Length: 317
Image 1 (cartoon, one colour):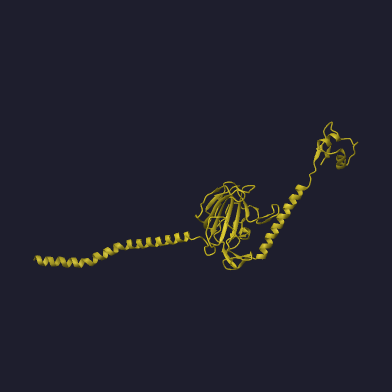
Image 2: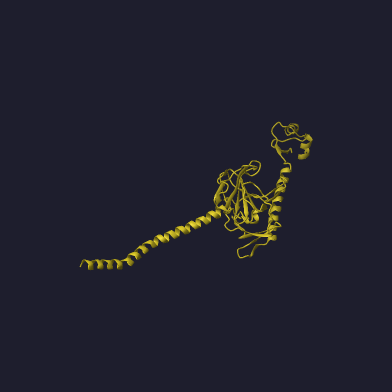
C-alpha cells in the first residue's frame, strides 16, 4: 500500500514538472526583455560617447586643437556642400550694424557680420558642434568662442562679456555659449559673428538672413575658388550666385554712398547765426566770434556803416 502511494506521488510530481518549468520560463521573459533593452541602451550610449569623442568634421580637418588658427594647411576640396539646416540665430537681434568686407575707414578687412546686442544678452550656438576655443583677445575679439560643426563650418562669436562654455564641450544649436558685451576692439556692445570653412572666411550674409532670422537655403555649396551657391534640399538652385552677389554689392555701394554723404555733411562748415542785442556793434560781434567786421558785412550783405536793429539775425560763420 505504501509502495503504491509512493509510486503515485512520483507520477504526479513528474507530470507537474513541465508546467512548473513553463511558469518559470514565463516569469523570466520580462526580465530577459528588460536586459536586452538595457544592453541596447548601453550600446547606443557607447556609440554616442564615441561620436562625441570624435571631433566634428574630422574627415575635413587634419587635427583638433584649442588654439586660434585660420589656416589648416590642407588641400581645399573643389566643391563641398555645407548643410545649413538646423541653424539657430546667435542672438535675438535682427539689426546688422556692420557688414563683411573691406573697411575703407580703418584700411582693413572686416571678416564677419556685426549684429547689435546689449551687454548681458544671451549668445547662442548657431549649429550643434564642439567648442574648440574659449579665449580673450584685448586688442581684437575680446572674449570670444570658436565652435566647429559637423557640417564643416567653424563659427566665431566675439566681444562677449562672459563665457558660458568650456573648451571641448559639446553644444547643441541654440544652446547658450556666452553673454553679449563690448570687450576687445569694440566701440559699442555688439556680436561679431564669423563663418569659416577650413580656415577660409565666408560672408555670413551669403548664407543667413539676419533680418528674417533664418537661412537663405538648405545648403551652401562652397567652391575652392571662393565662390558659392545656395541650393535647396531638392537640389534646385535657391538663389543665383551672380544675382546674390549683385544684391550684396548694391547694398555695399548704398552703404558707402550714405557714409560718404554723412562724411561730406560733417566736413561742410555750418552757418551760424547771431541775434543782435541792445548795444551790440559789428566790431563787438566780430570779436565775439573771432572773425572780422569785413567778413560779417560780406556774409550779411551790409556795410560797416549799416545800422543794426535789435533782434536782427546776422550770419557770422
